[in-house]
Amino acid sequence: MKITKESTGSLTALLKIEIGPADYAVTVEKQIADYKRKANIPGFRPGHIPTGLIKKMYGRAILADEVNKLISDSLISYIRDEKIDILGNPLPNMEKNMAIDFETQDSFEFYFDLGLAPVYTIPVDQDLQIENYVITVDDGMVDKYIEDTRKRFGKPVLPSAETAGAVAEAPAEASETAVEPAEMNPDFFNMVYPGLNLQTEEEFREQVKKDAEISFAAESEKLLFNDITEALVKNTELPLPDGFLKRWLLENNEGKYTPEEIEKNYTSFAESMKWQLIENKLIKENGIEVKDEEIRNYIRTYMLHQINLPNMDPEMQKQYESIVDTFMQNKEQVQRINDQLYNAKMMEFFKSAMTFHSKEVSYEEYIKIASARHVHDHEHEHELDHDHDHEHDHDHQH
Image 1: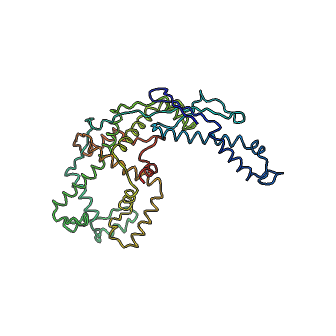
Image 2: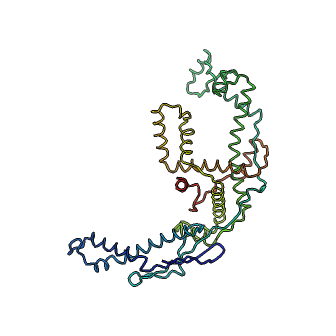
Image 3: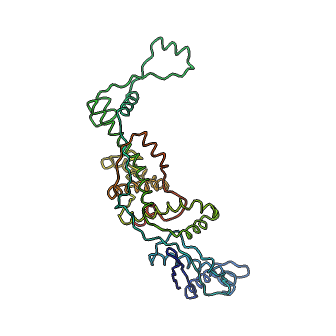
């Protein structure tokens, strides 16, 4: 077998695969012998069917299967061994590929087009003027939370005799149960924040404010992550083999989209692909990874609300691990957790490597900003390999 690669553009190449009898003869003869041993043809005893008849009946199909397998295996091996970083999948070059006749041919040539990933530098060390919105927590927010929480932990007020009579006369009318708000004392503080031993109203208000700031920070971080991805895509010089990718999208989706639809939506697709290339490069270069045990820990802590595993009774621990095993069988769920943990690690990296400009805003202002940004995930229907796909990642870690 012979494989040659020819450049056809700055980001495209042509592979030529030449297959001859020496590449398949032994395997085909073995397959024919196997067919001869197993075939059941009327008029012949099993194992005694003439080899010529087997070849006539099945030889062409056996040869075609073996050649197709050789093509598939050789493409994968060549791209891997030559360390060719491709986009999408190899596409048959219909102009150069000639019609094949397995009855008369014993040597074959096949041509495939490749889309190549570009060489690029990610400007994480530059100030890309990204704003990090810090949502301020004002006294009004704290007052509202405390008011609602006091009601939630309050005691129902029993109706007076007059009120009870009025309710009895009109039982169909909906009425809210009156609640006496919980008193602002250490008992109440402990119910809201167990274990913190808050003693004064001032300490309680500070804790409420701190919790709100943490919650808001997690919310604004989603917008920050989105702004980071958009800034990196915008500021990274990252050309793509557009013609090849449009063709790949069309052929890969088997009639799902028309050429016009692909052309119309290609810009969005290209941005998504650029982000995935950037993300994959950052993951590789910075050793960012999520291990199965981290996913298991996430399930234990956040989904099973179980924290003190080391101090747990062994039998109970075994039951918990059995539940975790069951969760781990749900591939979609595990992939979501995997992506979430990767995003968190990516954000840690961004915070350590990039410059952001903090800007204080009220919650109302933040909502307007986020809505105007149309915060979205870079997800489109294509099959560019993602370095944090759980199965793919698992293969490289263990």
